[in-house]
Every structure is written in C-alpha cells, then in structure tokens.
Picture 1: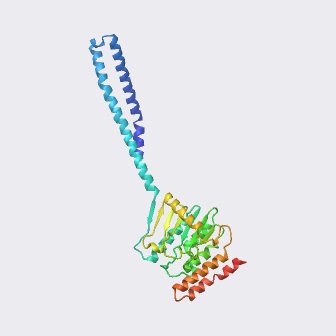
Picture 2: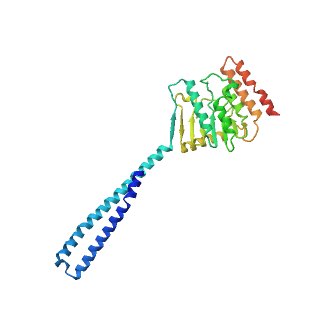
Picture 3: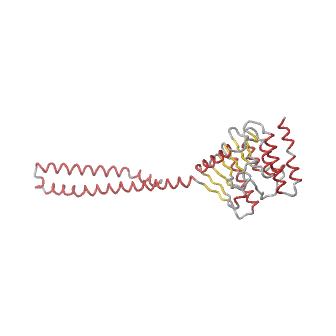
Length: 308
C-alpha cells in the first residue's frame, strides 16, 4: 500500500508533462489543419511532414495516457483490496490455549489469562457463570486460599478503579462458586452480582448455556470445563456486541433476587437462598458432605452482619 502511494507521488510530474505535451500537439495539429483550409500548406514539404508527425504522435500519446491512467486505477484497486484484507484480519484476534496439557493445568492457564485481561480492562467485565451442574476439574479449593488467587486479586483491583463495573451472573452450583461470590461482594460499589432463578425449569435442566467472560464488550474468553479442550479467547468488536446483548438479556431476565447491586450492600436474604440451594445440591450429589457444609456455614457470620 505504501509502495503504491510512493509510485503515485513520484509520477505526478510525469503525468502532468504527458498531458501538457498531448494538449500542445493536439492544438498544433488543429491549427495546422485550420490554416490548411485557407493556405496551400501541403505544397511545403516541411509543413506536410510536421502535420503527418502530429497525426501519428497524437493517438500514440493519447493511448499511452489511457494505459497510464488504467495502471494507476489498477494500483488503486489493489490498494483497496489489501486494505480490506488488513481490516478483516485486524477485526478478529484468536487466542488458543495448549490443549495438550492436563485439564487442571489448562484451567489454571485460562485463569491466568483472564486475570491478565481483567487487569488491563478499561471499564467493564461481564462474567457469565451459569451452567447448572458442573463437576469441578480441580479439587474443591479451601476458601481461605481461594481469595488469594491471582484472578481474585485482579478482580478486586479492577473493582477499586473509578468508573469500572464488574457484572457477575452466577448459578451457585459448587462450593467454589459460593466462596467466590461471598468474597466478591466485599469488593465495593463497583461490583454487582445476580443469581439465576433457583427453581426455574430451564435452569434446572442440562439445556446448554453459553458461558464466558467478556472484557470491555470486545474480547470474549470462553472458559468452561464443558467445552472440553476447546477453550479459546476471541477479540472482536462485532462478536463482543453480540455477546454483550446476550449477557444483558440474561441479566435482565435473571432472578429478581440480586445478591449485590452497584453502590449497595449485599442482600443477606438472597445469599441465604443461594446457600440453601447449594447445600441441597451438595446433599444430592455427595455422600461425604460434612467438611463442605462446614466451610459453607462459616460464611453465616458474614450473612448475619449484613442483616444488621
């Protein structure tokens, strides 16, 4: 594209000279033809030869000019095509994760990437975690260690910056998700969380639901154990706009119980509903529940403080 511009600039003077000479020859030929009507110029051999040369050069120069213009038009078309290709390539950026590593290591790499992207986010994060029944690929993480994870730190830092907003739409179907929610509600006025209706028929089935993190409405990170090895990130403003609308619709139609709204304290009643729902699921899926229930119930003190 740059080479086309340099060629065009370099030949501007040449094109001007070509046009000028063509016009001069045309005018000369025309004048000789008019004069010939009144005076027998053809009796002069030199004048006759000059007129013949003019008649020969005029179509040659005209044709040369035509081909030159055609060449510039072709270069312009090529430049436009290259520009369109560049725009298309820049419109979508894909990041693929190494699918040769074990599942637990893969999810750790994804968490690291999400943490990095949240740390550079400019204004918004949409976190959609709503697949109903999920078996964690990693062992349950102790709540005291969970809050120390890099991802959690980045979320806290993001929520501490003026003008930012972190939206989390979650189904509390594992202890890890409950720990995550209970820590995030402490991150201040720029964090908001909703839960999906606990007794909604659609939510209580294995109907597939798209799960992702959306950064600034332009980068989508598809991160879920349900995707198997097909975990990736995609940066595209158009795709971001589509999935932002998807998230906002889910947010609007989720449970009327909001765990925490922007600028407000968390709602203890909604938290209790989420906790009771989780305990019910744990009792249905696990035979050894004492340790898990003990960890979950340790947050009851936080709930009571919110009631005051």
